[in-house]
Image (cartoon, rainbow, N blue to C red):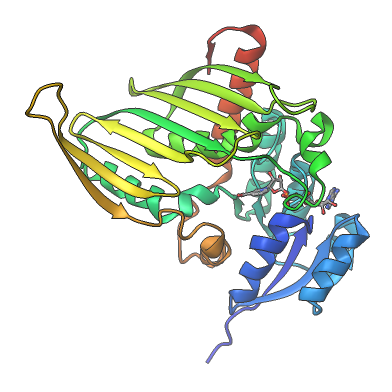
Length: 341
Ligand SMILES: NC(=O)c1ccc[n+]([C@@H]2O[C@H](COP(=O)([O-])OP(=O)(O)OC[C@H]3O[C@@H](n4cnc5c(N)ncnc54)[C@H](O)[C@@H]3O)[C@@H](O)[C@H]2O)c1
């Protein structure tokens, strides 16, 4: 019997997301050999080699790609490094899983799409929220028209920001040169992707991003208003300064609502809401833990995409579409005007 291929894996950027999601995820996959990582910070080498002593550390990803004959690469470096690193890995013949946001300009996103096409390799973007059980269930229910015609989506993703203890180097998130945006790009890109995935194309956006609390040079809070091509409206608020509160999204349709509170569960709401005595709300709990999945399954899912067992849905075009909305939102905030895409 023919032996199954073992994929040689490398990781570019060995910080928090690499250590919490990508490296342990690959370790779980049977068809993978964890070969090498590249990170200029030597503290990362110590941390990674303690947990994954079989790997070889490089300071420069170009050198790693030259030496190691890799098949699959995860790009987990700061935002500004995503395009050059992903393109170099594609040109070295690797399938690439790139962290979000895929790029910080449309020109870079196009260059990445071209590189994947030229190399005939897969390029996936890490839109983790799509892999949570709650959003998956909503996608299925919308397809079945379980809440009639959806006309409104509201998303709120907010936390305390990339504080020390999460990001190995929080300053790269707060530096416009390495991050190219603040909360609106970092958290907003997940929210925008969910909106596009569940409601379809966005035609126009109005937004306000602001630096309200933190003393940083990028936005720490933002609000976006989306106009979908199908006539529906979307509302997103994101932040890096929030104490625990609501995180999740709500979808309103002509026949009911889906309330996906990441902490309290995914519920469907129907019945009759009125000021009179006939008011009777019907709540059905669909999923008590709607954030199961995500990082837990992202890498096995990606390896199924690489081997052709699953379709490539979180593709570079999806990455580019969400980036277009995020960049339009920054433009809208700067000009104080609605921006048509
Ligand atoms: N999908 C998700 O849910 C999710 C969650 C967190 C972070 N992310 C994304 O992952 C990326 C990394 O975030 P993080 O939280 O791991 O940050 P981090 O600061 O913990 O790690 C980033 C690492 O990249 C390294 N680095 C810097 N320049 C590099 C280069 N030229 N080549 C190789 N490595 C380089 C840094 O030394 C650092 O170790 C960001 O783009 C972020 O948006 C995604």
